[in-house]
Image (cartoon, rainbow, N blue to C red):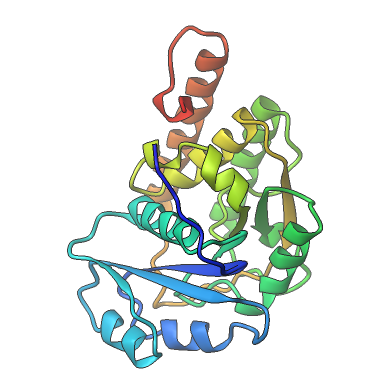
Length: 248
């Protein structure tokens, strides 16, 4: 059980940084002014000059002394965001693949009560979408499976651009999620299991050579991991096998 204390920032953007020295400055400076109360950055044991760049931006980063993983980074980010009194939390990647100028879409959707979890979908956007063909097929197939099992109607589930209400982050046991990329699909399943509403907004996605993205074999592996999670969810619902990440 995590105990939180409130301080007073309504909208907080959280950035999970790792070896992002070439891109994080541009991403940070492209965050629209006047919309965000605070930016929290966690460096997950970068081996380049990411921490120095963050400090030059006037931000004191939270630092993992060794690389713990993408999911572990999010655990630290969300815990600190809630501790800072956030009402709404939006995760923005530091590699420049997601456009910070799409942030108002998340903030507006959260404030309008459209969902407690807002997912940014590249497949709803008329803007930039440079997703490779094999990846588009796998992403859409995974979305179909999630929709069938969870009773959703989403165009994309494996997106890293996400917005949350503080209520959702206080209730779901995200600290029980994996420390790697499995964290993201687990959180979607948790949102459904604990009765939270999920909505989507269109976002742009642009790939670049500095970004850390799964290759073909990793994408296949992630696909199987997603299917395994859905099976765990079904078994948990049928009370045949307990899924730890679904127990509060």
